Image (cartoon, rainbow, N blue to C red):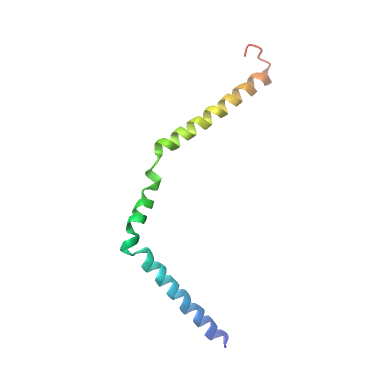
Length: 76
């Protein structure tokens, strides 16, 4: 088998794979799944905010205890 023939076969297979993926992506059966995935950045905004707030409170508490010890503050 010649190198040119081998490259031609590979190119043909890649074109068929590209056409197959394109047909799959634009099929009507996949539209609801892609519509749902398109809305994911807008979903769970409240849950993300709560998670960030709790993480920052824990971090602030540990920084406060560390800073009071490092400055020699005996009142805390």
